[in-house]
Image (tube, rainbow, N blue to C red; front, side, top):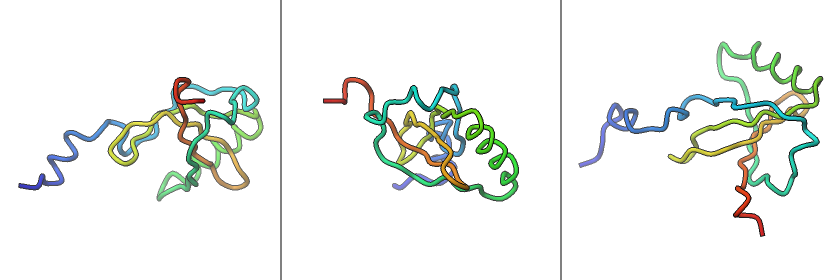
Length: 99
C-alpha cells in the first residue's frame, strides 16, 4: 500500500523544504575537489528580496555558505556560492570519498 503525502511528510528530513546554513567560509578556503554536482538556486515567491540580499552580501564578502539540504530523499552537505545574478548550490564529497 503506497504511503500518502502526509505520511511521507512525517518521515522526510527536516531540510526537505529548507536550506539550513551551517556556517559561512571564505571562498578561497573551499577546495573545488570537494564539489560534486551543481544546481542553480532561484528564489520562489516572497523570498526574492532576502535571496538577493544574501547573494550580494556573499559576493561582497567573497564567502560561500556551507549548508544542509534534502534532495532525492537524502540529506546532503552543500556549498552555496554567488554566481552572477543567482546562487549556485554544489553537493560536496566527504574527505573519504576523494581519491
